Length: 76
Image (cartoon, rainbow, N blue to C red):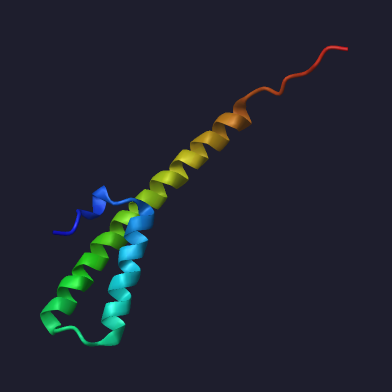
């Protein structure tokens, strides 16, 4: 059984999405399988998007922290 999207790394999700897209583009999948793959792809996209948003928030927090630090001045 496939891992839950939330347990996959961002890179693993992208790799699986590429596989799903390739499979669907070939058109040799039954309608039921195509719908299952599409549903899985949507879940992977949503989870990946959430991971990207979390990373963006972390970067913003880090940048804000560095902006608020007073620059050190060396005494002559």
